[in-house]
Picture 1: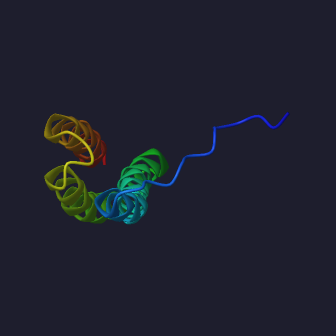
Picture 2: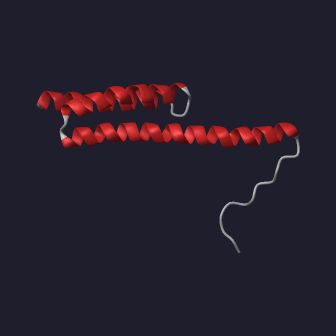
Picture 3: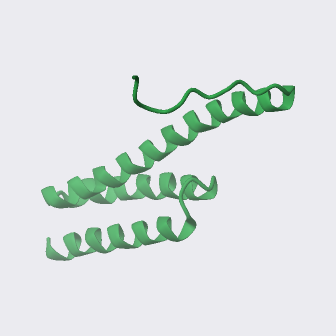
Length: 99
């Protein structure tokens, strides 16, 4: 027997069919933004570990706008976004102070 998720039934009502179509599009958009968020954070962390102060500062500035956008859209909670920005800011500042 095939394992995995059970097959979903098609909604009967037109409003249900429309909601299903919208869910597919919204899910794709949210997945893309979530990936963009994680990539931006990861790039800053890599620059900090490499010890590249200028690159870390530049990437951090770009990361802030991505994080704020994702938080405004409700994909991640605003407090999570603020926490991530705060932690990475501290790392970038520590790197700049050490240099």
